[in-house]
Length: 126
Image (cartoon, rainbow, N blue to C red; front, side, top):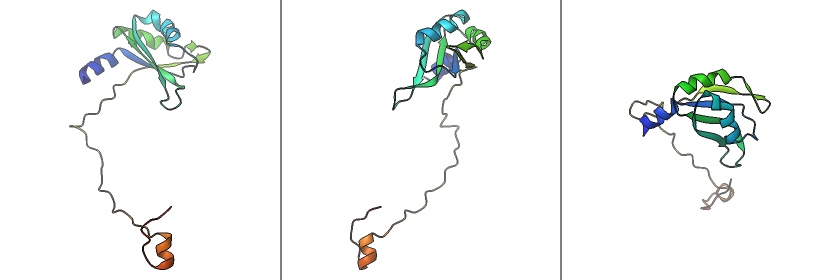
């Protein structure tokens, strides 16, 4: 699975500063001169559903990625887009060393009732 993702990513580009009204078809047309396009993905916010302003384009071959760099800083829907090769984002857990530290002990806060009466009321609020 990781090898397939890396291979697909080697044929893909990241397109930044994409107009929020852009469509998959418009992006495909803008980049079709670079080579056959397999897939266009416009990223959207998972909560609002609104476009994030960038997209990924996967080509059929790696040479298209090089050709697409000529469209860096080109105008698309009145905006100057930024074209870069897609980076593969794979987490290698076996060769990963993250700076973890033990959690501090839990802090227990007295309840308001316990503070007034000197007893634990069993329930609290914040």
